[in-house]
Length: 419
Image (cartoon, one colour):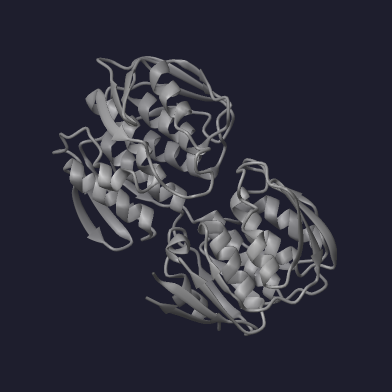
């Protein structure tokens, strides 16, 4: 199992380029099934979820031209409607293939999707099944295996009981080829949803309201395909900004959209983190005397749950007490026990809240990354810690951050990957 060896206390400086958004790329791959034409994807991050999605597409019969961060995908010869279990049960976004298959072929078979330990047992696919049913699909379940079928999908008025990014995206793709009008209510509003809608509309879809709580879709009989440039990963950009702030470094973050990080930048204004920004870059300046600030995660445009873990590390260096409240995932604060092992002064009030008292010195330890976002937080903690930290199970980190060690080395980090 691969691991990172990080010696902390090194001054970081320079520029780092943000990769394409994980949550945009992993949706555009199943979206390729909506058309028989060739889609060209640019700025694709080569992370595990993308590679598994490509495996699924190839198993279904898609023709793929792989040029690293640029892909050409043609699904004209796809005839299978069953997702390969050995691949699909390894990552949660395999469920995103179901809607496009159902919309195009009237059928989809798939196992219960696997994925990240965060929310394990608490991330059912009920909303997906309810939305497909609302569009007219018949659902059969046998031994944790699902069979969906529909002679013809029809529009529906559907309310999401929980705002869900993937649920919203799935319904958007499926409803594009359904007959009539679909109204989606209480939709998630993340930038990746608007990016998907923009691409689909360019190919002939009729989607209005993406990026707002209500989306209206008028079904069409077919869609084309074209060029799609994956938007920058706002979570990666935010993680790098928090890394710079926590380490007191000056780092310019390039190929990002600062407008996607307005909540984080507003918090920076409150806690004495200095920065400049342009249309596609953010410069984090050396900051000292970081102020504590209580934080509660919330769906976009609120403070992202995916940035909560790096923010916790920053608060260990703040001058006083801060309360962090996680409202999205039940188990996302459990990892802070490892930060306590490094010397942080953290009290867990309950599974949803921690109180952090800073500033504290952190010290190198042997750790295991439990998930993507806790993993990047441990990397940041290791970079500012005294001594050497060993982080095992970095597969979890690689799932969200492409070639992280190589990019951090260019900033001056002492980080080594051991296979």
